[in-house]
Image 1 (cartoon, rainbow, N blue to C red):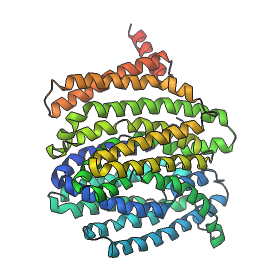
Image 2 (cartoon, one colour):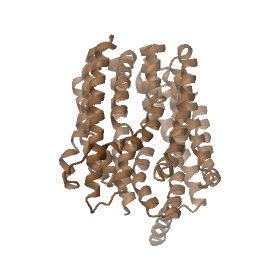
Image 3 (cartoon, rainbow, N blue to C red):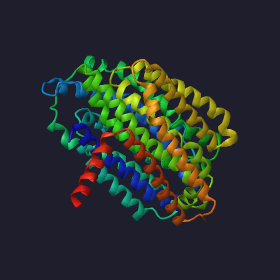
Image 4 (cartoon, one colour):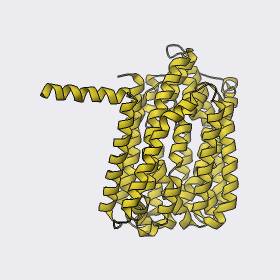
Length: 483
């Protein structure tokens, strides 16, 4: 098995866990805490996440790419790691101080919860996951994440039992993040040794980090700022609706993120060696499988939303069904853009185009939020996010249209979108004859998956897809042996 496949499976196993655990805990937490407390958690976490973002700047992408391009058998990797890490720590200390000032001067309504969220900000100083991604050690990060997340979610069921336990829920979630970062340190010195560095060497990483931070902060306008704006312009209950809507659309997208994270160092290596043809072959394959998955998730969520929201979250969260339906196309836009971004723009250091796309999307999102949130609440933020993600995907597509086979990608993958649409229409037609309960939801999910897979696997067979053909040949051989 190739290194890319192994790393993808390790990262995918971790991302699948991030899907399964919230699916188990979200219904429980939603019913125990209620929409308003979920909104308070989301609002305070969003503020803390902004300080976290400024602590890390562009280190996640820049650090991974820089380590991947380093000579792992020389002192170069030691030198680059400590330069980037000392830069990260310096910024993190400043952000912790600023967050404490924010709590003292500006946080009035949820001060205790905000103090607990300080743990999230502190975690940035210990986050060296970018190093392990750079040396393609995904097994280590996956196992560490799985163990700590399981412990954290177990504590939620043990300790959180009533609305007044909001602070405990926040403490558990924040501590899970913190210890996930801390757990990577015992293994670090197996791969690097400490070397002294200078302020000059640290300073040279400021500019590229800031450049890659621009898209991070811009993306936050439609990932984090949405929640802050709902909290300011609407109500905590509306924010609770939005938080659960985003969770259901974001959690399955973790599968797509798993592939993108794995591919950055591999693609960076190919580009550094001048293997552009091989790079484009990988992109074409990735686009096919990502849109296959993205269409299934997107139209699947849209299909079952009217039944899913009240069954999964409770009757108090019934408005989430409409928000889920409107939000669902975002997965296709993000899936498409993630391939272009993680497998071409970032590995080829096309930071300017990447930055421009997300700035444009952030501006569009901010404008729509100001226009719609005060009147539509969470729905206004959902509309703004959808349009922003479409703008980003369209912009990135346009800037690479001459280098990548964009038209061929579209022709090859439009069938998956049509298959998803067919599945959605059939499930919605059946939905009117079913009552809202868990059995109906299970029927809709299983039937929808069956319809989509039959249509899409048939299409992949026509395309002579290598994975499908491999299994088809195995089945033919098995049947032949039986006969």
